[in-house]
Image 1 (cartoon, rainbow, N blue to C red):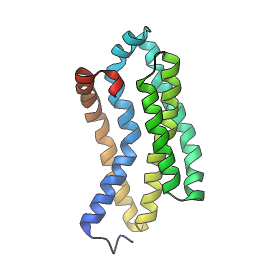
Image 2: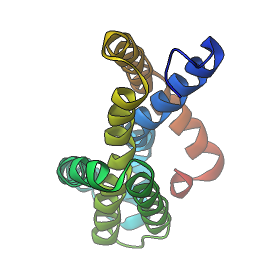
Image 3: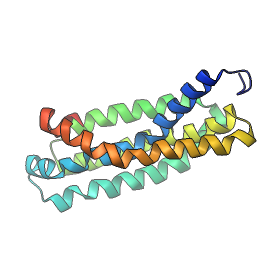
Length: 169
């Protein structure tokens, strides 16, 4: 279905869905930043050591971009996207059950590899679902969604931590 045969409401839902996919990784990073002191206390390490999980996440995200671009082109959009999101969910469960900083860092790396499929897939799907003249507008809307992540994610993360603990994030 091309953008000209979809209704405005269908285009809006598609753009919001792609925006959510695109913002998954930044939201994942920003949401757990307020939990560093509690993670450090729970795992018996320094807060600075917990901050390494952000660096590990970015390294995994970089590898994921290299990995998913060709996979999305070769196998279509859905299989790599679903596989990546499955890795993301399973690695997130691993993060929640981590008892050491090393295991948390390993699972954060895997979370980034899996979650990267969402951002790369969303960008590829914009090119699939919208004509070139509309793509720039859609990309700017995705950037708008992405830019709200650093505004809301730490606040949401703080509330989640206060009520359920860091492992829920």
